[in-house]
Every structure is written in structure tokens, then in C-alpha cells.
Length: 246
Length: 246
DNA sequence: CGAGTTAGTGTAAATCTAACAATAAGTAGG
DNA sequence: CCTACTTATTGTTAGATTTACACTAACTCG
Image (cartoon, rainbow over all chains, first blue to last red; front, side, top):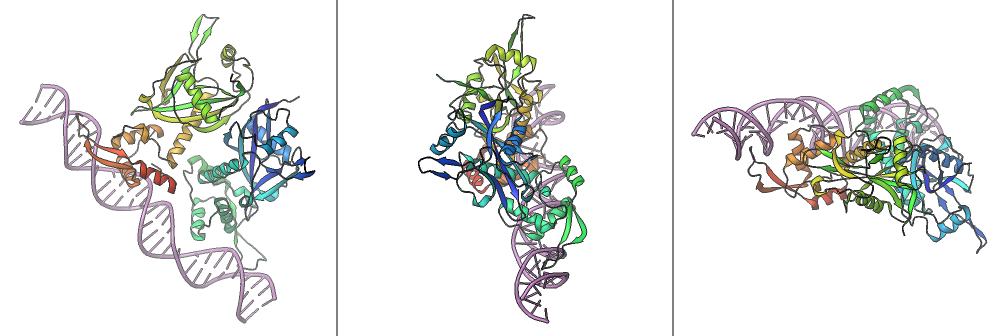
């Protein structure tokens, strides 16, 4: 029988990209309000207490799976959040009382984040999550607990990581156009990037390979497809990218 | 009466600079070996469980003070470490049994680091620390628990921070020479830096002001003193340094 | 076949990086 | 006084990188 650690939780900030915009996975932790006899929607990051004997990294994956059904997502830590009052707002306490045996216990949470191809991961809510949905990052409203703070930090961490390790190729199909790749970077950084400069820089890096194939059936000049050169990428990781700024 | 949180600790990686080399503050957590009837030296980072109702940042300061007497040192988080087996080596367990009421409890630790002027902070061991000493980072041997891992991570974080926020001026006297400043950067990055390029870059940043005064009594050409332009520094922080690479 | 849409391309100016060596100003010791 | 020693100080050049900027190409749709 697994015991929960009453003092340590993990919250997951899962970013998803849909070729258009950056999203984040939220759950509706829900709550039945007995005063008004209705259901209240309260969005939160997927997160929960960890088990006593579980690795943090594994706990992050388990928590995410328990609440949203999504599996095998490798996330990275971005910080620990331990304000003693972070769970004590009235609405947070009401909710905690409905699911925790020690709702007033002080909990330090460890934040984990990752970025995935949104359409590959269709969340299915379970446990105390009443629903689990992808929400555009720019449209996220007030979240439970201190989760808006966590989201901000996670986004900073994502951007930071992108500078030293151009992740993100796994977010695109095996054959992608440079415009798609550019859109990914624009979505994450939330700003426009010059097309010509972007292409020059990516191509010089050498991590994409031009394919013979082109788009078909589009109502404009068809774009050439590229593929991701994983070997070259690993090579560069060894050397150390230093900084890759766009 | 304050209660300790049995599951959460803080470890402090305090770096100190002495105008020559980068040091780190370690404690000898000590232990009397009843088999061999002698004292065993076991170096560790200053760290301990936090109190139930304490902010993490404040906890970090308190822990550091309790063990080494050093106060008012603002540290930054660099990660959480939660391997369930991180405290279970034989020697670590022997020691924990001598001071904790629940020595086998699983503890997640939050790492904090900072960088200070070494000579301004003379540690005085107390609590379970038998001594507290500055050790050159390059000479650190095997530490207790997973503290070598923490030290590595803290050093990476320090270097990383230095790229986006050239801290370190508080580590030098109000009037310093550019060679001293350069030595600081060299110590942290553990490599030589070209003198001419370094000077050009620092001066262009505009965060140092040339003074009229020069060194006196040195057996070589006296160096000019500079002071740190804090206003200009704050200004740059606002704009965002982007990256400051040496 | 014209309108609409996205793809694709080059260049110049400014800035930054990296590599490199000779002279200057003091003290110390004879 | 003179020499040896030590550290300080300074500039240039070639190459790479950054930034800004506008027109033509290729396709579908109506």
C-alpha cells in the first residue's frame, strides 16, 4: 500500500503546440458548492501529492497520468514553491477539504514542465479532475492556488531552454516546412521573427535536411519539406550550443 | 514551539570569492565512531529540515545561520532533489540516526546558492556542525549525501546566472581594478579570459566608472581603480541584458 | 485569367568576436 | 643608479553575426 507524502506535491505544466499557438494543459478540479447547489469550475495545473518512495521525475509522470491519462511524457523541473500560505485561500481550502485527509498541511510543490505535440495527446480526465483541456496560453485566466505563478515560471524556463537547446522538432511532423518551424518559435516567444533571418540561421545550424518533396493542394506556392537531422543535433549538443538566439 | 517538517530540507551552496579562487562553504557534520573510538570527518553542505510554517527563502537563511552563523545572505533556488535513496547510504544513515527523530524518513531537499565576498563572512560552526570552513571549489572531495551533485548543479546555475546578470561587483571592494574583476570571472568560469577583450566588453557595458585614483606601493605598474555604477546596472537589468558572454 | 495567398530569396551596414604583442610604470635588489 | 621583474594598459584586423528590408514565384479559387 502506497503512502502519500503529505508535504510534497508535484505540479505539471504541459505545453502543447498545434501548429498555431502554444497551449497549456489544465484540469477543472471542480467543486460542488453546497450553498448555491451548483458546480463551480476551477482550473488548475494537474498536480498532486507524491508517494513516499517515488522519484520526483517519476512522480511527475504519474501525477500527470493519474489526472489526464497522458503517459510517457518526460518533463523537467523548473522550481520549488513553498509559500506556507499557498494553499490557504478560502476557495482552495474548501476544495482541499473535499479530497485530502490533511487539507491544512503545508505543502511544498515541485514544478515540472514539458512541451509536446498537442494533437498527439488527447487528455482524458480522471481522479479528481473533472475535465482536462488544452487552453491557449494567452487565454489562461485565474488558476487555483499559486498556479499562475507556476505557469509564468514554466514559460520562462521553456524559453530559456530553447536558447541553449533547440528542442521542438519532435513537435512537428517528420516532414515539415520551415514556416511551420518558424511558427513554433514565434508561438513560444510570443513575437514575430523575420522570415529570411530565421531560415538562414536554422539552415546554417545544419539540423534540418531539405527534402525533394513539396506541399500539394495548397492554394499558394507549395512549400518545400524538411526533415530533422537528429544525428547532427546530438553532435551539436555534445559541442554545446552555447546560445541559439532568434 | 516550532515543528520541523520531516520531509523537506534545504541545502545551501554558498560560494565565496577571495580575489583569488572560488570557494564553497562546507561544514564538518562530524560523527563519533564507537567501533574505532575516534572522530570521523565528514564534509557536507550546510543544510537541515525546514520548519512547518517557514518560507523557503527564509528557511534557507535560517539554516545557514544556524549551522555557520552567517546572516543576511540572500540565496537563490537552483533545484529540488528527491531521490528516495539519497539519504540511505550506510554512513549517512549512521549520522542521521544520531540527530534526527525520524532518520529513515524520505526527505526532498531544495537547493539554494549565493556568492559572497569570502573575507566578509567568517563562519562559526554551531548546532550539529563541528566546524564550518571555506574550501576551494577545485579541491572539494567526497561530500555527504548527494551533496556533490548539488554542488555541481549550483555551480552551473551560478555560471548561467552570470550570463544574464553580471553579478559579482558586490564581491569586490568599492574601488577595484579591472584585473581583480577579471580574476573573479575567471575563477567562476574556471578558465582564462583575454585581457584586452575583457576590458573592452566590461567598459562598453558601462557599469564601471574609472576613478582618478591608482594603486600604490605595488611592485609593478599601478593599476587604475574603478567603481561599480549601480544606477547603470539597474538600468540594464530593466532593458534585459539578454546575454553577456565572456 | 485575375485575385489572393504563402514561399522563397540577397544584400548591405553595423556590431560583435577572437586572436594577437608591444610599451608603460612601478618596486626590489644589487 | 641601474637592471630585472612584475603587472597594467592599449589597438587592429579578419571573420562571423545581427538586423533591417522588398520583390518575385507558384499555386488554388472563383
